[in-house]
Length: 95
Image (cartoon, rainbow, N blue to C red; front, side, top):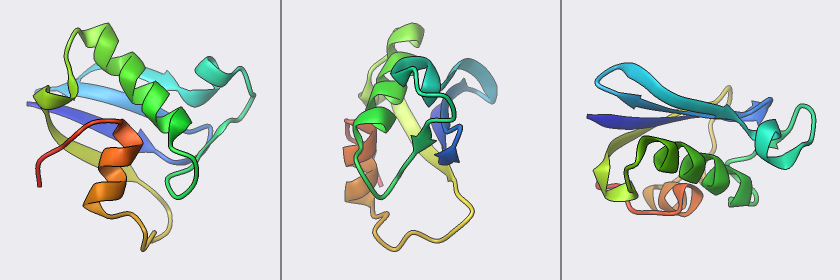
C-alpha cells in the first residue's frame, strides 16, 4: 500500500510510504529554495504538487498507485474536499 503524507504549514513537507516504511520525503524549501517554505493546502497547489511529484518520481510510481493521502494540519480546513486533495497532489486518489 502506497500512502502520501502531507505536513502543512511552515517547513511543510511531503513523504511517501510503502507498507509503513518511508520511501521518499522532501521539505518544500528544497524545491523552492525559500527557507521555512510554507506548504499551504488552501492556497496555491503548485508547491504541494511539485513535492508529491518529486516523491512519486523518486519511487518510480504514478498517482494511480496511491492508496491514501494523509494530511497533518493543526486546524480544520473546510475547503479541503476530496476534489481539492486531488488538485493538490496533481492526480486522482479514489474515495
